[in-house]
Figure (cartoon, rainbow, N blue to C red):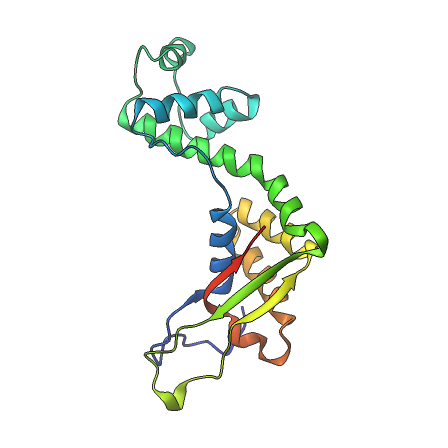
Length: 191
């Protein structure tokens, strides 16, 4: 991570690490079932999605759900409802599988046409005394395809260090003031 913000918020600036904002932006691109996991409809939809492939069954297993085939069939037939703990685990398994399934599409969409244009909003300095404020403006840059590939892989692996390294590479393109964007208010893009 870049170094000028070693004591971030010492003067009351507000923001998040750029890598965290990047990861959150990628996460927000993952859409799925809108019905809550505690409803019959939401559970039925999650079960259909999870039991449609071997990867889904693996995701169920990774989530710690250990039920007999008979119980699983009863859930699928809506004869029985999973208990609260298993509903929570099914939701976690669903989103885990959903993330893995959309990762390839995310890479393709974000890398299209030579990369995706990103808008970086600097930290909020409204609470910072004028003498300590930095001259920061909203910046726009095109993030190259190889950065998106690495960013999606790091996001998928929940690897904060790798995501931070990608963010450092991305903001290097901002020139000498790149370190001013180690922390940001938000990052936005359309893909």
